Figure 1 (spheres, rainbow, N blue to C red):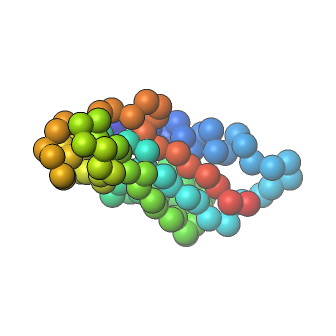
Figure 2 (tube, rainbow, N blue to C red):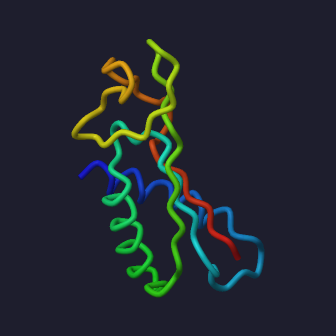
Length: 107
């Protein structure tokens, strides 16, 4: 459930960055920056819940996954948290510094 906290914090930051006079966002962009530790589907679900709580239940969400680079072979990987290993060489993937998700609201 750490996705809920990461998404909540990222959404709070995105809401604070709203332009002056903006009433409601048109769409949301969710970027999973640490797919080895944050499940993209869970992050999107939590974003939908948080947005619904704010009255933006029908807001379109575009989700992208930023690949993690394997420190052993250099391959770009999009792992699942249940299998956080390089698909090429099997080496454990590193944690990515930062919150694990980024959210941008388009106003």
